[in-house]
Length: 87
Image (cartoon, rainbow, N blue to C red; front, side, top):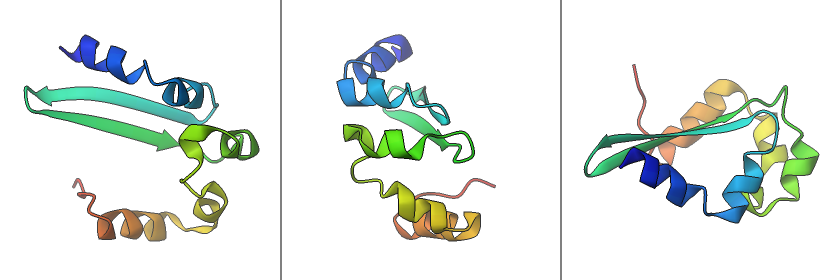
């Protein structure tokens, strides 16, 4: 089932293109039959932000603004938007 879920994600051309950007990774894990977890990593030291900005997947991510945030500000924004914090 996890393989099928990964394949369905990889059918999205914008997502596939995003995965070609150095410093951007995405991992998909099937937690159980009703839940999956997507872990997305932005390594801004390695990422070509200018290249990414022109891609469909990143259009609404506001990458230049993200670069201005401290890690704690970024985490606070995610939590305020509904993300859960892992301890």
